[in-house]
Amino acid sequence: MSALGSRAVSGAAGAAGFGGAGRRHVLGGLAAGLGGVVAAACAAPEGAGGPGQSAKPVKISWAIWNGPTLLEAQTAGADLYRQKAPNVTLELVNFNDTPDLVTPWLANTGPHIAMNYGSQMIDTARQGMYTILDPYIKRDAKAIPVDDYIQFQLKAQQIQGMGQFGLPMYVAVYALLYNKTLFQKKGVVVPDDTWDWSKYAEASLKLADRDQSVYGALLFGTKFAGTKIFQNNGDVVNPSDDRKAAFAQPPGLEALQWIHDRMWKDRSWAFAGAIKDGGFKDRFAMLATGKLAMTEEMASWAIGDVVKGNPDQVNDWDIAPLPKGKQRTSRASIDAWTIWKGAPEQDAVWEFMKFLQTGDWLDIQTQKAGYQPPRVSLQDHYLDVLKKAIPQVANKNVAALTHPVKNKYARPDAIFRKDGDAWKIVGEAWDAAITRNEQGVPPAFSDAARRVDAAMG
Image (tube, rainbow, N blue to C red; front, side, top):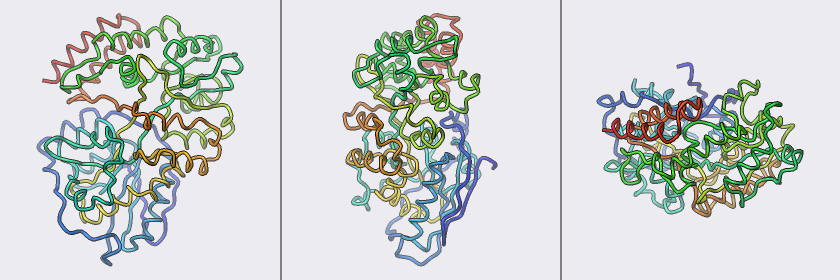
C-alpha cells in the first residue's frame, strides 16, 4: 500500500527521511465493514519471558504516524530496543491515517503493534481487532503503572465486556498558540490563564484586519465545538447513553452561537480554508508569519514540528491555557499503542509494548518530537526534558500543556456509539449554520440532534 512505508532495524537503526502529512482524519465507514470479518480478540497466552531471555530471532512490525519528528523518535527507540533485545528485528512502518492500517489487517497482514487514536480506534476495538491485554497486565503489574496513567485515557482504551485493548502512548493536551509579536504590534495584552471567552473575543476583534487578511483566530471543524460545549458546562454526547446527543441542550446551543458570532458578527475569525487560500503550508506557518493571531489546534505533539518547521519565527510565538468558559476545560487525546490480534509472536510483541511504557522511550518521544507522557507523575519531568531537548522552547510557557493534566481539567473528545454517522449529521448542521450562515444555530443543531438519536438506533 502506498500510504505505508517501512524500514527494518536489527543490527543498526534504519534511516529516517519521510515527509510529513496531514494529521487526524476520520475513519468514516471503514470500521463498519469489520463485522463478521474480524474474529474475537486474542487472549494473552501464559508464561512469556523478557526480551533478552531467548535467542530465537523475532521480527516485529511497528507502525507510527508519518510525522517527521515522530519518525525520528521511532528510529531512536528502535536503536535502543535493539540493544536490549538483540534477537529482535524491528520493521519500522509509517502511516498517514488509520485506514492505512485497517486495510492490511483485514487482509490478515500488517503491523503487529501500532499507534492508534480517536473514534476509529474505538470502532475497530469493538470489532475485536486487537489483543486484549488484561492477562498480560495482571502478570506484569510492576511494569505497567496503571495508577499513574491519566485515567480518562486509560479507560478510553477499554471496551466493556472485552477488556483493555490498548495502553497509553502519550497525551496531546491542547493549548492556545499565539503570535506574541502581532499582539505587541497591536497593543493587545497577551493571553494568560485568566483569559475567558469575553477576553478571547475582544482580543480577536482587535487583532483582526480582514483588509490585510489577518485573523484573530482560526476555526477548525466540528470537534472544536465539542471543547467549547464542555467549557460551557454542556455535553456533546449524553454521559449515560452514547446513543443520544446532548449538544442541542441550552449549554451546547449557547456555545455554538458564540462560535457563530465570531465568524459572522465580529468577522474576526477565519475558517481553516484560509490556510490554503493564503498559500501557507499549515496553520503554524500562517501564525508564524503574522497572518493569524491565535489557534487552539495546538498540542504537545506539534511542539517539535512548530519549532523545526518555522525556525526563523521561534521568537514570535508562545502558548497559553485555553480560555475558560463557565468552567475550565482543555481538549486532550486518547492515543494508544495497540497489538493487532493476528500478530505472530504475541509474547515478544507484548515485551516490546512494555518497553513503550518505560521512561526511556517516553523521554525519546519528548526529545525528538515534544510528545507529552501519559503519566501524571512525569509532567514536571516532561517540561525539564522538553526544554533541554528543544532549547528553543526553554522560555516558552510550556507549562500550559501540563496544567490541565495536573489540575484534572483535560477532557477527550466525545464519541458516539456510531461516531462516524453522528458526526456526518453534525457536520451538515455545521455547514448550514456556521460555514454558510444559511440557517440559524438553534434550528440547525436541534434538528441534527434528533437525526443523530434516530441514526443511533
